[in-house]
Length: 560
Image (spheres, rainbow, N blue to C red):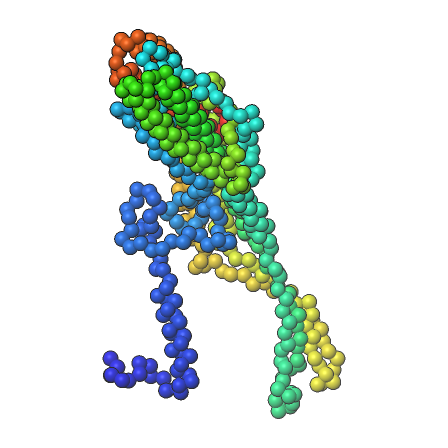
C-alpha cells in the first residue's frame, strides 16, 4: 500500500503541463459515469404487467427517436436475445369522463352494473348520463307521459361522419400509421443490404527495394512490382441465406404492421361509438332542461301565487332546472372529450375538432356466424397469427444461415503481372503472373453455438405461435360471448321491461293527476323509469361496441 503523500503510479514524474490534461480527462470520465444511468437487469424491469417490481427504479426514456431500431419491436422468429415481448402501444388519446351522479337510491342501474361485470371484452368507462329529476306538474294534470325512446334511434345529422368514413380517414391521415409505414421500405432496404456481395480486393506492392542500390558486396534483387487481385468466393451461399432471412423478416414485419392497423381500426370504432353515446347523453340532458323549464313556467302560470303549495312547487321545479343544467354541462364536456379522442385518431386539426358529429344507427340486426366459424376465420385472417407463422419460417431460415456461416469465404488470389526490374544488371525486365487460394480450416470454430441457438429459437417461436393461437381463440370466444350477452340484455329491456314500464308510468301519471297517490310515490316511480331509460341506452351502446370488438378479435369485418 503506498505511503501517504506518495504518488500511486511509478512512472517518472511529469511536469504540471502533462498532469493537468490527465486529471481533466479523469474528471470528465468520472462526471459522465455519475450521470449515466446504470442498466437495470431484465428481470427487474417493470412493464405494467404482473411482474415483480424492481428494487431500484432507473429512468427509462424509451427508444431513441430517429434510431435504427424497429418501432414495432423484435420481430417474430428473430434470432436476438431478449425476454420481453415487443410493446406496440399507440394509439390515440384517452377520453376522460365527466362524473355525474345517477338519479335514484341505487345510484346505478342493475343493467349498467352488469355491463361492468360482464365477461368478455373489456368495456370502457360508462358514459355520463344526464340527471333527469322527477317531473311534478300541478295537481289535476298528467305531468309526464309515456317514456320517449326515440332518442336511442337518433342517427345524427345527415352530413355527419359515418364509421366507414372515419376508418378511411384514419387509414389516410393517422400519424402513427404513417410513421409505422416507413418500417416497410426500411425492411426493403435490409433485403438489398443482405443481398450485396463482398467487394474484391486489389493490392499493389513493391518488393526487394534496396536502401540505395545492390552491389557485389550486398547483392539482392531484382526489385519486383506486383498487382494483386483477391476475389472472395461464397462457397456456402451465405449471401443467399441472408437474403432469405431478410425477406422472411419483411413478410413478418408487414403482417405486424397490418396487425397495428387492425387494432387501430378497433380504436376508431370504439371512439366513434363513444362519441355517439356522448351525443345521445347530451341530447337527453338538453331535452331534460327544456322539459323542466317548461314545467317551471307551467307551475308559475297555473298556480296561485299566495298558496304555500304553489311556492313549494315552484321552488322545487327551479331546483330541478338547475340540477338538469349541471348535468347538461357535464355531458357537453364529455361529448367534447369524445370529439378530441376521435380527432386524435383521425388527425383532425384542432380548429375543426368541434365540428365532428357522428352519423349512423346503433342498431344492426345482422347475425354473426357461429363461434367455431369465427375462430377458424380468426386463425386464418388475424395478421398477428400470420406474422408469427412467418416468424417460424424466418427462424428456420436463421438455422440455414448459421449453418452456412460455418465456412468462411474462400479468397482467390490472382497476380496478373509481376515486373522484375533488371536494369541494375543491364538486362531486360522480366514479367510473370501468379495465382493462389486462401481459405480457413474449420477445425475449432464451426459456429456451433449460434447453430444451437438458432435451432432452439425455432422451437421457441413454434411454442409462441401455439400460445398466440390459443389466446386468439380465447379472445374470439370472449368477444362472441360478450356479443350474445349484450344482445340478450338489450332484448330483455326492450321486450319486457320497457313495455311494462311505459304502461305502469302511464297508469301512475293518471293516478297522480286524480290525487290517488302522493307526490313521493310518483317521484319514486319516475326515478325508476328514468334509470331504465338510461340503462336502455347503455345496453344499446354496449351491444354496438361488442360488434366492433368482435370484428377486431376476428380480424375481419363480419358485422357492420
